Image (cartoon, rainbow over all chains, first blue to last red):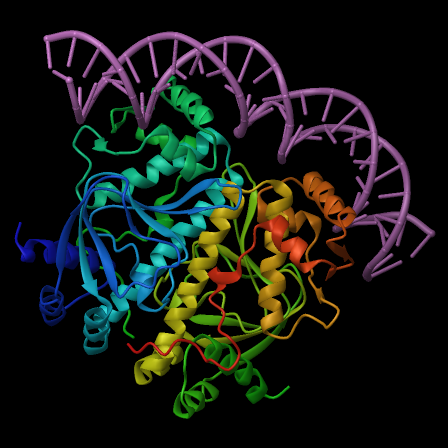
Length: 252
Length: 252
DNA sequence: CGATTACTTGACCTATGTCAAGGAGCGTGG
DNA sequence: CCACGCTCCTTGACATAGGTCAAGTAATCG
């Protein structure tokens, strides 16, 4: 894959978040991007780090996580193709959580300085990036509700709905509503604040209800409406734009 | 209180988040601010609204909340003096949660257009505002961990630690480590994802341990270290700056 | 002073966690 | 190609944190 094909993924993502002109597109394509392949289970950056560059996910799945004093690992967010996990590090020098590859990943790195320069030259880019971080925050808010207010099966269903929805937007869900989701039941447990065993049992319930199939990292949704109902899922908080309507043209 | 005294609160807050020059200060003082007094228990804005202005809290306590399909109310965040709860609405037109006054409040409103204009003229202000929303996001992340990964007493202790820490920064905690915290046990339950009764019992435990006193909306911390230990609290995620060091001078 | 709201307590229930063991799949090295 | 050793999934028995219900008390307020 050429450099240009990677930046194209970034352009598409940002255009789905905010209007960008051709000038801005060119500026994004001109960003100095370093591509890296990473194995599964690697920390990309760790809590306490002070990175000087941003990470962009092009392929694979990554997650933010943090460990409590009692040693419980809590996953806070997942990122797939097009996501910029640590965009916030442009303005928050110190990382408050760790970023982990959940699978083999292709990621890119861009120096903060380059991002800042592009943003200062192109207010549209700055707006797009800001809006991206605001959507991330909206997702965190929904996660608070998910782990704080829903029962086990609903939590898991909600999480799966979110993943499928976000992956669908970037073309990672097949016609038959199946997608590659490289998460173990233990990972789902860490993301929902449940135990391993209980996730297992809840998944069995969801299978018995005919909602999903999930094995060997392949999730298939058999009953999308049913899954959304179980998970109390309403995608509004993801602030997706209708295809064709390229974001809300808010000017700085 | 004069208009200027209110904008002064805003200036102080933003300067604690990011470097601002005298020019930027002047621009903030020039913002058209409308002050309002609100009673306790009022929705300032609601999920689904498309506000055209930002809200700033000058006095009292407000909260973001959302209600699940099963009717469980989950509080997602609290705001006190100097906080700008719905700053994100500059870029996200639709609100994904509702903002409620937990007490009598003095709030101010500034039109989005005015904020955008100030931000476009003064990159430092734009950076300060962006950084503010990023810190909010860091707090959401910590809340995910809190409700997802900690036991009841730890959750409550962590929440109280956060509130006390944030209020201390803006001078709302007295010498004797007491502060006005207008929350019922039911509110604490909604914020921690616990039941009313269990919050009651956990608070009793914390009192028995000699950590706090909490009655009639007055919280007194008797053992700050003990409370932090119980709550597994580390304030790093709040990105406070040492007094004197006015934020990290990151340029757009 | 009655009504309302918040707090407290006890009894009981259940969702979820913990522990432990077995099985299935899979990559690696001999 | 087998065998070992992973890691993950599954299941059962049991434990417990926390929820629910219900009633009573205390505080607050018009």
